[in-house]
Image (tube, rainbow, N blue to C red; front, side):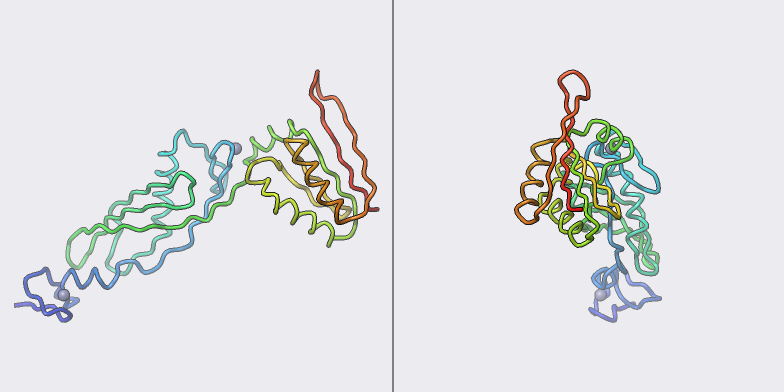
Length: 225
Ligand SMILES: [Zn+2]
Ligand SMILES: [Zn+2]
């Protein structure tokens, strides 16, 4: 009669090779490690970047895509194989509930485990949304200075306002002579300008141009040259 070397039980399935019962084997852990899960997603259209941008028709489509992705991220112990995987995403996409059916080779059994995995989200506009937004920006801040410290201060200010998350800040482009930042809203851009000018002395110039009909575009120049 086989007896589990760990718990002494004889009425459970015991692997001759391992010398322990299936319960003790499972208790010891079936996952070796999990690689960090990062997701680059477009906040406007929910395309996901994987080499190129992929479009999904539904939330379930994203989950199905992640199921394939997670198979490579979850590394099981030797003799344990992923038989089936189901991913359920939280609506803010920051967390995934994962149900795994694992095949235990030495016991010829399948067991289910559940994991809560954090997802590191990187929100960035995909190429087509970026193109759309850039064509439709309302305000452009032009910071002109060769002082890279001031440029990074300006960048910090943009980050602190959290505009990227709310898609107010469309894009920023760094130059040796400063930075351009494009906004969907003049009000948001002006808030940045006000904050910046509290701290730094600069020449300020506002230019308004007509895009079409009643639509205007504003260029806010912060000149420190
Ligand atoms: Zn046991
Ligand atoms: Zn997009």
